[in-house]
Amino acid sequence: MKTYGRLPFGLARGEGCWVWDTAGRKYLDGLAGIAVNTLGHAHPKLVPALQEQVGRLIHSSNYYRVPLQEQLAARLVELSGLTNAFFCSTGLEANEAAIKIARKYGHDRGVERPEIVVYEKAFHGRSIATLSATGNPKIQAGFEPLVEGFVRVPLNDVAAVEEVARTHPDVVAVFLEVIQGEGGINLATIDYLRTVRRLCDERGWLLMLDEVQCGMGRTGKWFAHQWAGIKPDVMPLAKGLGSGVPVGAVVCGPKAAGVFGPGNHGTTFGGNPLAMRAGVETLRIMEEENLLDNAARVGAALKAGLAREFEGLDGVVEIRGQGLMLGIELDRPCGELLGRAAEAGLLLSVTADRVIRLVPPLTLSEDEAAQIVAILAPLVKDFLAGTAPPAVVAPLPKAPGQQPE
Ligand SMILES: Cc1ncc(COP(=O)(O)O)c(C=O)c1O
Image 1: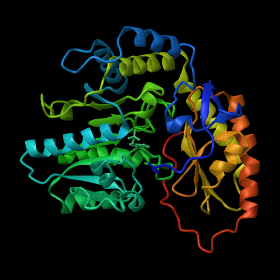
Image 2: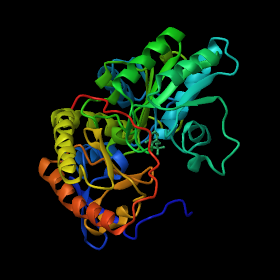
Image 3: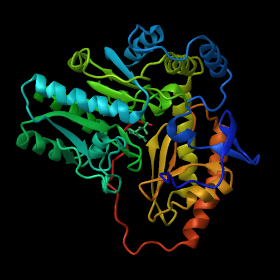
C-alpha cells in the first residue's frame, strides 16, 4: 500500500552509526530508524546474543511464565523506580494499553465516562485510540469519528490544565510526551512536569508519560522525566528498548499497576523471548558502555556544533532538544532536506514540516557528531539561500529549555 513517501534507495547493511544502501553508498545515520537503533547497527555484543536466542527460543506464549520477561521487567522497574511492567511490540500498543489503564482506573472509581488530558502537537500513534489522543489534525483526517474522552490543552500552559481540573470532573489522567518528537522536538519544562505531577496527586489522576521516543537513555538519563525528579504512574516505552527488535512496554507505579487483572489486556507477541532478550541485552550494553553519559556528552557537542553554524542565521528559528534528541527549527517547510541530506550521505528526518530532527544511535562519537554538522551546515545554508522566507512565520509553541545542560 502507498502508506509511506519513500526515498528512492534501500538500506542493505549497517555497522555502528553507518549504513550502506543496496548500491553500496554509505550514509551517516542521524536517524537510527527514528530513535530505534540505540546501539547502532550490528553491535558486536548484541548480534551474538540475539543469534544465540534465535537458536534457543524465539516465541513461546503468555500462557506460560516467560523468564526473560521477568528479567526485563525487573530491570525496568529498577531503573524507573516503578513497580510492574506489561510488554507489547510497538509504541502505539504501549499507549493503547496506557489509555485502557486510565479508563479502567476511572471505572474502578465509579467514573462512567472517564476523560484523559492530552496535548496540542502530541503524537501517540496511529491506532484509532492513539490517533485520537494525538494532537495533529493531519493524522486524524479521514478517520473520524475519533475516540471520545480526550480533553486537549497546550503544552507548558499551567493555567490551561488547572482550568480543565476545575471544569472536567471526569478527568482521570494526564497523558504527555516529556519531549514531543513528531510535534517538532518540543520540551515540557521541568516546572510544568512538577506542577502536573502535583495536580495528579491532588486530584487522584494518573500521570502517564509517553517516553516512546524520548526515553531509553536518549536525553542522557534512562527516562527524560528523571531530569525533573518526578515519577509517572504509567510510562509507555518502545522504539529504543529493543535496539531494532520490536519491543514495547508499559511500566507502572503502585497507583496503576493493579488496574489490569487477568483477561483485561493481552497481545500474542508481547514479551516474547526474542524481544525480551533484545531488551535485556540493550540495557546491559548501554550500561557497560556508559551510553547515557555518551548521549549527554556527544549530544551537547552536537548541539554546540549546530549552534556555531546556525545561530543568528536568517531562517533558523531555534535549535533545541536534549542529549541525542535534537531539532533545528527553520522558518519555512523543509521536507526536501530529507532527500538532499541523503544525497550528501546523511540520514535525518523533518518533523512538524520545518524542524530538522536528529535522533542518532546513542553510540555516536564526537567525531561522528562533527561529521553530521559538517554535512548538514552547507545543506541548510544552501537551502535557506535558495528558498524564499515565508511572508509570515507561524510560530510553533515555544517550550523554554527544560533541563540543565
Ligand atoms: C512519542 C511517541 N509515541 C508513540 C509512537 C508510536 O510508536 P509506534 O510507531 O511504534 O507505534 C511514536 C512514534 O513515533 C512516538 O514518537
